[in-house]
Length: 573
Image (cartoon, rainbow, N blue to C red):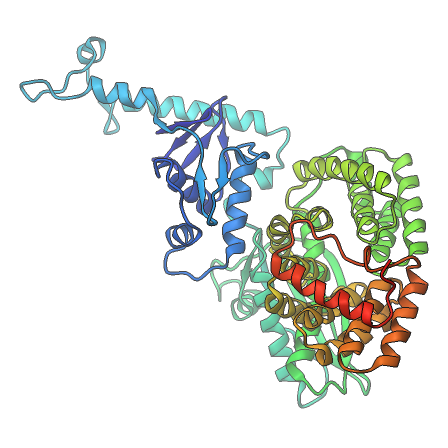
């Protein structure tokens, strides 16, 4: 038992407890990292040392490490980073004194052998009769009964706030992915259906709060319950693949296995002329997987707030949230203003609605990124959004919309390392989330990891979900290429992005830099003119994106890009 800063670390029970003695929930990897810190004697532990100790013989990226560090700081209330500190050179240390718990030391002292080799026990213990029942000593029996009483009392206290199926559930909900039915009447249909089934299975298997039954076992269980013992499921995913002259279409649904109730239905299509079969399969799986994963998240992660705040799943509140999300992803200043007014009105009618407040915070973060607030307004909006999201994270810590909004907040406020962790958590509930992938790529850009960012944006383009966000990762891929000096490769990405939404002048300024450096001078000047029309008053001094917390590699690359924009005609001041 180790103690530090008011906490107890029980290594035998793998448990962290606070001052009140209540256990603080930690994932096994996060607990193991805390144990390493507590037993290191105040030594700085390098990132490599931590990753090799916590994930032995497994290759993981730094994002996994950052997620554990963030979870530890949250568990310890270390928002100011005074306990777990980042040391020079990139390692971490637990910056507080760690001591052995006194009661453990006292017990060891009381039972040490005497000079004759006998253990010294307290007199009242030594004098007590040592009868046994069911093979247990009297002391062990008393401890067992006391433990049982604690469990019973705990369940009695928890019963009013926990649903019975959640209270006694020992395993995560099980989703059986049934083989996609080939209803295409096309010779390629069987292979296409099998590949899409595999991609859906792999994707849902990445979701952290469910377990997935493989298609073969799911099919056996569906046809004969005795054919696949132990494969009973809570939900089933069923679908059919159809083909026409113009498209392949996948129709899929989530069904509650016990009742047959349909929880969600979705269809996705790709062009029948798509020559890249793996790309078509990926987009079909992502098109239905993205929607169904979010629906599962709504079912499994209900709001912990008042009944009034749960109304966003139906009626006008849901419409308001959906319209706001569309405005976040496909932004013009007019759409932004209309969406903000709509959400503010809805919140006036339902001020306790967590989902509406989160949607407004996320929308307003987009407004900050687009510089549509004055500096004074931006400070107020940021503070209000931060308070809203902290409350929402406490109420709905595994909600995809809440995690997305928090990720956007961290990105908009230039906390890029933290944004990578939060966006990765959003992906752990929706692996096809293009919006989260875009924000991850943006964080990688500012950290100077341009190749990683380009790969992330390409992955988002491969999924192409949600379609309303498509212009963002296209812009991101173009930006990454421009920052790496790959201007020819950047042009088609930027052109495709602008064709979807020309609402931001930044895209045109980047396009101008790429044109200029490929000696297309007239096109470069035209792109600058269009950018200035959309963002009048832009000069060399204010064309820069915010560079707080950006790496030197990123800053140097942007300097070269801005110079190319000036060479193309951007005013100096």
